[in-house]
Length: 114
Image 1 (cartoon, rainbow, N blue to C red):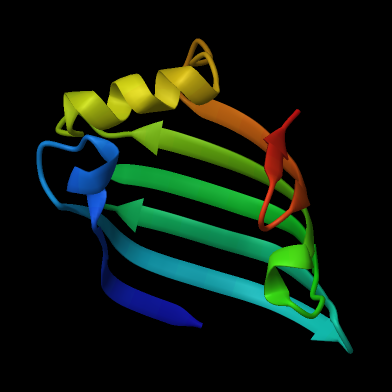
Image 2: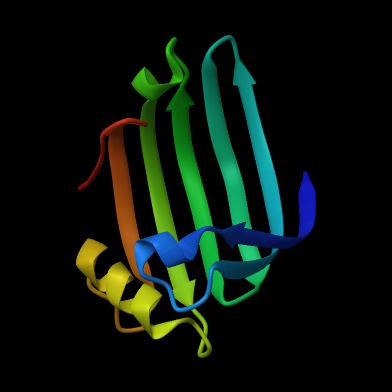
């Protein structure tokens, strides 16, 4: 699946200077069976922040109990809101290439960065 001109909104409530964040084009390649879902590739390019995600989701009822095991790489572009960049710094330290790498596990209600 490919989505173009993807935008996340509601960021002022998280301290963003602007309410929205442009992600650009998002490409998702995934497969699943039953309640198990594997993200082979989820990439966001061409926006204020690039992202790459892979991993697994195990859906449960209620959805908040769904289990996650995701590897996330976030790459801020030069024009990213400085407040959002500072917020990223609370989650992880940037690598030499400026990317923030996260390993999210746990549930959707209580994700943990390992």
